[in-house]
Structures are given as C-alpha cells and as structure tokens.
Image 1 (cartoon, rainbow over the protein chains, first blue to last red):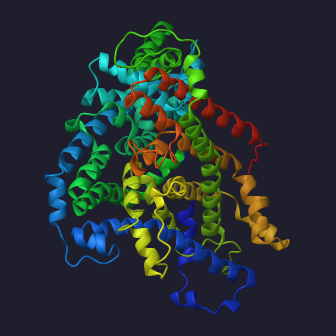
Image 2: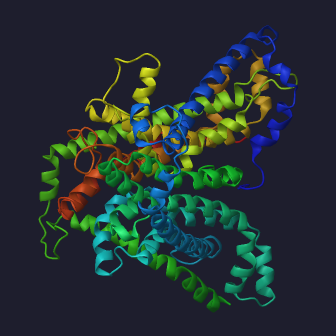
Image 3: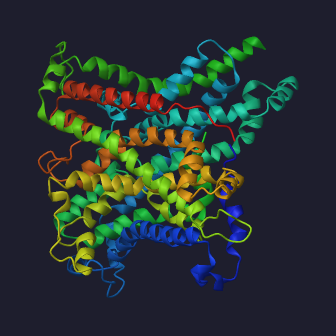
Length: 307
Length: 309
C-alpha cells in the first residue's frame, strides 16, 4: 500500500537515461544480437500503439479549430486558421457551461459524501469486532461485481416515488451509494494496516471514539484517502450510465450526457466544429489534470487492483 | 467503554449502510421479485405471472442476440486486452537494449509511453465513444481518410454501418480505451520483480520469450487474474452499455439490425423505451447469472499457488 510516495519504475529509470545522446544511434552490431533485434522491434510496436492512442485525440483537437467544410472534405488537414468561435459557440449556445456547472455540483457533493461516509464505514468495519461485521463487509464488497443496470430499473421508480428523480441531490445520493463498495473495500484494508497503538493511546487519554477517528485516524489515512478520492473523482466525473437513466431533465444534464445530447442536436444542425470543440473542451481539463498529477492519478487508479 | 463502543459503531455505520441499502441492495432484491411480474413501470398495479417472463425471454430472438454478443465480449475482450497489455508492458520494461551494468532494461522513453497509453483511462467512456463514432464515419471520418491517404482508396468500409463489422468496431474501442490502464498496472508489477531472476535466467541461456512465460507471467499471476475479472465485469457493464448506446445506429443503439446489441443495453431499452419493466428485470437477471458465472469460472481456473518473492 505504498500509493503516493514510491513509484517503483521511475527511480530505476533515471540513471538509464543519462548516457550521452550519441549512443542512441550506436551501430547495432555492438549489441548482443537478441537484445538489438528485440529493441528495434519493441520500439516499433510501442511507437505504433502510442500513435494509435494519441492520433485520435490530436485529430479531435485539430477538428475543433476547423470550419465545418474542411472537417468534412479533408479530415486530416491542419486548420486554415484557428476558429476560436467554435469554442465560444459550444460554451454558450450549446450549453457546455451549464453541463460543466452541473457536473461540478454533482461530483463535488458526491465526492465529499463518498469520502466521509466511506471512511466511517470502512473504519468501523476494519477496526471493531462486533456481530455481523463480516456480513456487512461482504454486503458492501459484493456490490462491486453486480451488474448495476439490473438495480437501475427498480431504482428509477424508487427515486420517482421519493421525488429524487432529476434532482441534483438525488443524483449525489446515488453516486455516493454506488461508490461505497470500492471505497469501503479499499479504505478498510488501508485502516487495517495502520498501527493500533496511536488510537489506543488517544482513548486512554480520554478521547472519544469519534474524536479519535476524526483527529487521529483520518489524518493518518491521508494517502489512502487521496488514492480513493482520485479514483472516485474520475469515476464520478466520467459517469455516464447512472445519469442517463436517472437524470433525464435537459436542464440538469451532466457533462457526459450533455455531450451525447450535443452530438444529436449539433448533428442535425450540421455544426460539427462546435461539437468537436465541446468534446475537446470536456477532454482537456481531465487530461491536463492527469498530466500534472500523473503519479498520484496512476497510483490512485491502480492501487485497488494491486492489492 | 463497551457501551460507548457499540453506540459509536451504530452511529458510524447507520448513514452509509442506510444509503447503500436504499439505493443499491433494495433495488437489487426488488428487481429479482419484479422479474416474476408483468409490471410495466408506468403504473403501480401489476400481478405475479410466474415464469412467463422467463419463457418469453427464451423465445426472444433479440435476447439471444444480446446474450451472444455479451458472451463474446466477456470471453474475448479480457483475453485480447490483457494479452496486448502484457506484451506492451513487457516491451516497455524488458525490451530495452542491454547496457553495461544492466542485463535487463526498460526501453528508452518508457516513462513517456506509460503516460501516453494511460490517456484514454482518464477520459469518460462517453467522450471516447463519441470521438470514435466520428472517426468511423465512412465519408468524413479520420479512419477512412487515413486509409485513402496511404493509397487504400478502394478500401472504405462502412464500419458502424456494416452489420458484419459494427460489433468488432465497438470492441476495438473498448480495447483502445482499457489497454493503457493494464499496461501501467502490469508495469508496476513487473518493476517489483527482482532483476536477479532475469539475470540468472539469461545467464542460463534463456531467451526473452522464455523469461516472459517462466518468470514474468507466473510472478504477475495475481494481478493478471484480478485484471481479468475487472475487465470481464467492464465488458458486461456500464462501459459496454455506453459504447453501444452512443456509437451504434438504430433507435437507441444496438443496430444495424441488432448486430451490436448487448444485454445491459437491452435491459435499458426494454425498461425505459418499451415500458416493460418487469420483463427488463428478467433480462437483467440473465445478465447477473452471466456475470457471476464468469467471476466464478475465472476465480476457479485462475487459482494457483501463490508465489512469494
């Protein structure tokens, strides 16, 4: 569970990158034959996959600056000039600003809720013995492998009866509930690794269990909270199926739904440049955040599977 | 203190457990019950119909098509994705040329590859699906334009419009968006395998491919198995739903001619388009059976002695 501080690969790489640049083009004969051939081959394969990943994204960025005509006639040409009006059209007329705002509200609320409720449940399940502990734990963890769509059919009508359908707070509650399985699974194994002595000392000094949790245990669990927070942030920011079923009011739509909506409406209008601008607008903040917090994001997303 | 302990436990568990029970557990239980009713979803009166929905399901051609596609997804997607990811991760970590002092080395720029491959993982599956819907466009899409650019003017498939190709196009998008995650995951696993193992094997005359199957794969097995289950659930769940619903043609996706429909999409359409909520939960139960049997089979087949290193 060394999530944030020790990425194993990078430390080992740095010295390798140091030899002078001329060595890159050194003749292959100097290498052992197997290594050399494999090296050329592996570079080839790796470059091909890198292009396959990056080119579609670049194509979208390029298209977002072109006019509709050149998007259709020559998909791979560079824009004749930077058509920033596509972006402003997408932002205002196509409601991208509303979609962003809705998403920020929903994800902000549900992320805080998920972390608070998830860490409370995980802490109790990890550190206290009581009848039913294992049962409740597996009830939570089992939720990770069930097909959500099965529950969504009755949930739609449950939410409708409770007046929660198409509301921001309703969507927040659903996001929290469906984020709990992984959060509880991840954080309870994290709490189990923390030393017991500190909490015991606090209790002996007269702190209540609640105070011990908020003032001692939560700060100690910060690395775990960051990992699971990033995991949930991306999952909730990118969520598509839950809002598609439970949040159909056009006014309340979140980003991923809004884009699909945009694809349909701008498709009718033939405004593909505006649509690409919308897509790229939704793509860039997440990609930029990923590049900046690359190490934490990777640790957060892979931590669960590496256990 | 004992007294305080139980009050604390109940106080801390009550809110998360209540939320989870209302929004997750209860709907699951209800949906099993509804699968035996003729509930439309529009009104609150319905009656028990026994196994009628299940009989109807077994005679429903679209259900069989969806099931067939979903089974294909769950068998093929993890296999292809994980194999590709293992291959790329091995190339990144072990494929480098031998330099002095290190028998086994990562390729130059391995950090860059890992960053770039991970891009799709942070994007919403909805964005990815939309992007590829345009890329696949036969007239103005990036793919056919690239094909003509390299002289393949007469190879201009309809992609998503071709019933024989559409399903493969959808699967390719799911592979595209998930491989990078597993490359990074396996890279982290490979980096923790001691270098001496490789050096010893190479001294004994093993080539790189032998070292992959005899050292890397066995030591990485737990991670591969976890990834297998994760990918299978994804292939049966929300991601498959989103790509098919957004990318494919037809009323609500799944076309052309039901050639791409999958179980989660068919559940959604039956419940919210055709107003047959009871029957939709029946199909959902079938999806649940497929998911749980997949997880059980992988767990059983994948069980090996755990290697400590």
